[in-house]
Image (cartoon, rainbow over all chains, first blue to last red; front, side):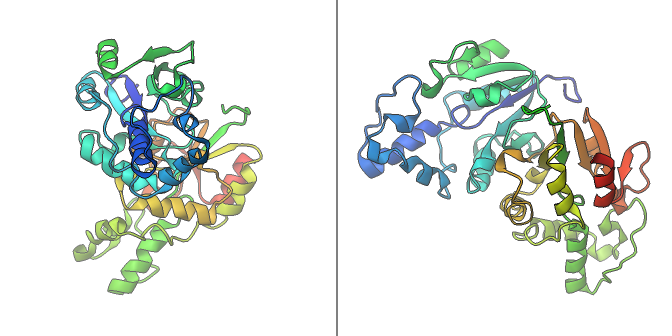
Length: 178
Length: 178
């Protein structure tokens, strides 16, 4: 629990606050004519749905400066997170360390879309070895070792996973946690 | 405890792994002729020992790109941390979010001096809401809310603080934790 006794709510960025999937698609569309409504096979990563010669391209995109700077926020994320601050101490926890060039972009993106989250409540991590009450994340590698309440935010790559409390969108998060 | 059951050892950067104090002094020396052996009054921040007209200068230095890139590592830190990995899962935890321009510099600095720390074990935070067994830090604002074993790394600004287990240098850390 935080100092003021509000429960700590930790929230992932990519595929949770930020529609990173949409950003990838827009780049594949721009550079290779891939359809924006490319069929996403359940349980597959986005790149696993692409023609074989494009499957490695995501690693180039994601390491480019600017990739994380102009990602669209997920629908209803901003309003919902803003409102949840009255009941929770909200932290943003992103595994940004995997991509050195993401650090400034993610910091600036949060400043643009979530300026009400102070620097004290932002964590760029490797492993999410955090002490919090709730974690919303789309990756079970982050949720599995977490000791609090674990909310799996639905993303095409995780739709086949069972055994986790699931949220499908930010309206559901708002209903569940308010 | 981490997956492989080694205790988690979390280590701060500034004034613990990195001699940030020394970096500040070298800039004050270069720009204003301040002596490198400027007397440090116990319990005072470095800038509180400076002439009044220079007291605010540190905020300019610390926000400049490059400030955190060429700080000398603390004596014996590299060898000690390297050796401690056999008994501990070592994480570096720095409150880097306070200074946006520090992010890439700190990342690159760790890559130069501590390349054996993988990205999974680096956390740039605001509040250090981490789950670990031991935390070595020079600031009690970070140690006080931490639930594990708290080691106060001696720095001029904290010499008057009592009630914490204290380490004065990396040789003492090595003896205590090996």
